[in-house]
Image (cartoon, rainbow, N blue to C red):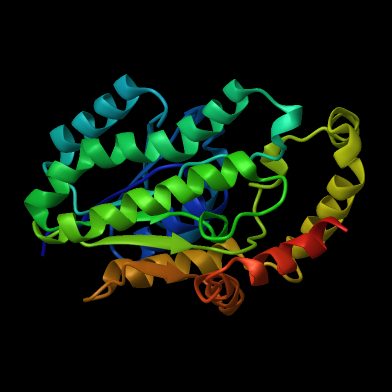
Length: 280
C-alpha cells in the first residue's frame, strides 16, 4: 500500500505537534510545517521519543509565496497529497475600543486567510487522490466570547467558509471536516502574549470585565480541567481514518455541550446569559 501523505500546518507546539506525532504513529508520512523551523526543537524531541519520523518544513500561512513553495516541494518529493490539516493559528485578546482595525486585520490574516490560502493551494491535489481536508476551528468559531471579538470573527469566518465548501468539495470526492476543540492545555494561551497590566490600563472602563474574564479563562485552561493536546490529536487521527468523516466534530463532551447550547439558542438569549457571567 502507498503510504498516505499528510500536510499539517502549525506544528511547533500544541495540537499541531501532537497531531503530527499521532498521525505518524498511525502510518501517515507527515509533512509537519511551521512558520519558523528554528522552533522545531519540541517536535524533533517528540518524534525521537515516539520513534517516528516527520518531515519538517517551513510554511508561513500568511505568505502566499511560502505556501506555494512548500506545497510544490511536497509534490515534487512525494508526488501526491492525501490529507491536509489546517491547524496554524494565533490567539488574540482585546476589545475594539482598545485596538486598531489593523490589529483585527492581522488576526484575520493568520486565522482565516491563512486557512483560505492553504486550502486553495492543496484542494486540487486532494481532488486527485480523494484526499481529506480538516480544519481546526474552535468552539470560539460557534460561540462569540468576551474580549475575543477579532479571534471569534476569524473562526466564525473559517466555519462559514468550510461549511459552504463542504458540499461543493464532496462532489469531487474530497471530504471536509471542521474540528472544534474547547479549552486545551497548550502553549496557545501563553503565546497570545498579553501584557495584563498594560491591557487593563488600555481598556479603561472595561477593566473590571476583563479582570473577571481573565480569571475565568485561567480556570478553564488549567491543566486539571482542560483537554490535553494528545487527546485532541487522537480525535483528529481517528477522523482521518474514519470511513465517513462528519462535516463538524467537537473534541470533547464539554465542547459538544458548549456548541450545542448555541445551536439550540435561536434568539441568542441563552448564550448571552452564559457568557455575560464571565465578565462579572
